[in-house]
Image 1: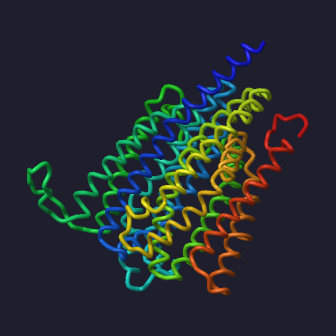
Image 2 (image 1 turned 180 degrees about the vertical axis):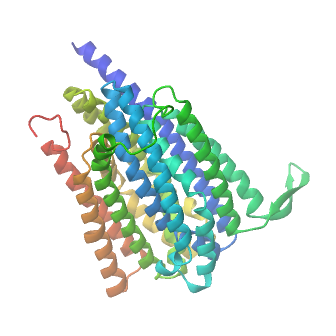
Length: 461
């Protein structure tokens, strides 16, 4: 009996790792490119860094809204695969294609028409508003391929294929880096191993970084669409691309709370960043760089979240209550262990990492301080990440919506407003409010886990 249990746990562990590592690697490469982008733009000066970073939270708002829509399809497709309903999964994918077309065109119109106003709403310094608006406009020209990359990538992961989005992500990121070298800097002479040669360049600066990303996003959207159409399990080939309410209704039931959650929290990030931008150029640059650095250390958490959502959806589709309990018992300690390691590394490496992106002593000091603060809270936030992933997989998105909105607006935003606007405190107080938000999420998700209300197959709940 013990041997059978051990084999079951080993098999489950291998499945978890097989699903998680490609997503982790994909996110690691995306973060590496983000590091390179920030470092390249940072070499142009603090003004350029602030122009790029000023609209970062609006980017999160847009991308997270699209990702939330994808969660509805993830839940449906993962459950269909768990129940061995391949036809149902393929029908759901056809609805995902329809969603990409509708949402992609809608966001294209919105982002391009509002690009000039976004820096104003974000309280960006007047001297860089025009540059920030131009950067935002170019970045969102390929909105349709960006939607395809996010939604189709989620569809493939829901079907258990995490390697295809990873491979496409690698190609997109390599293309982005190459184009950055060619578009950001002017033609210059480079010496390598005593050999000198002329590196061609357009010298577009910040706008070159935006153009490089736009071209890379377009290539990624095309590649993942082709891969989806050729996929043996979930290809929408032959399916009718028209609304099917039998599929859209349950997908939207899951997606809508998640969309409202992500929209509400991302809008909170926008308000949070606007208050930080009002603190001045040094705080804006330190905040932007700290966010970039921090993102790499959340990779283990969010990589495991994707695997948790997929496997929980499979278990729910198969009505396997024991497997659901075993999954949670394995995911949580793995997740917390990974986040302890990543948090410890962030605490130790913070000054050096911030120094990669800025030569300003004030920016390095401030960025290092807030990163070391948040590093301590990472294991607690990791628990919230994994619980939210499993709840997404089984279609329970209402509780995470309430938890995240309450934490964002009642703790982070109100707290930051009081600290910065009323008490005259700086960036450190704002990040302290962010940490308090993360700790509140830990308490709420821990209560949900102990009660068992996260698991729809739990008879006691």
